[in-house]
Image 1: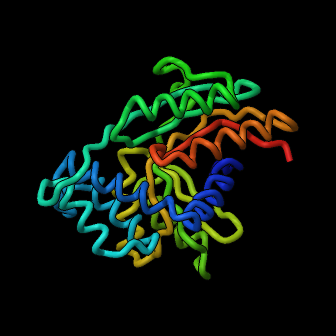
Image 2 (image 1 turned 90 degrees about the vertical axis):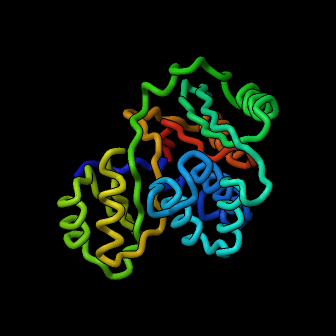
Image 3 (image 1 turned 180 degrees about the vertical axis):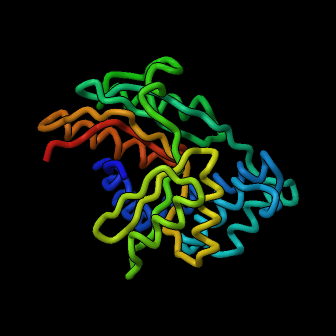
Length: 241
């Protein structure tokens, strides 16, 4: 199956560091809250909420935190309403960025995101100016832990996945948005441990960056990810190492 993006590996490493900084809980709670607000607090009838809760459990979030977030969303407890926002922009060397946010203050968020792009990039773009360079895909990662590639491949192929890539210590499964939940469920039913499962923007083509531009792109990525309002950052950068 097709090749693997170097940026995906970098993003996975950054997610591990993000957990150590403690920011992952804040982002997961926001996602749980929005998912429950949009389609109700029942996991069995709300795939987005089920995915958010599964990811929270994978990050070792206490069950009380998950329950409280759902109750706040459904009105059983007093809570905050979050807006879902997506920004598009350009970094050095024409590198494209997509920034997904969940926020209770739109003005604060756009000002912060614009500031980072002004300082380290080439500015925010109009809606649609960058998104056409990406495809929305389901990405599922599983620790290898002695599993064989053929075993995983057989399961995901039957479930309708697009791609399987094997890295040093994990498998990465790529699916269409429509097949994402079916593939995820097939892996769960096979009693395989899922490290992370999410819908992501995957670049159709990458732009190679090096030297000073690469440093600026990484700095922009880091600054955006450190924002409490930012959920996910995607880029088509390919670092020339």
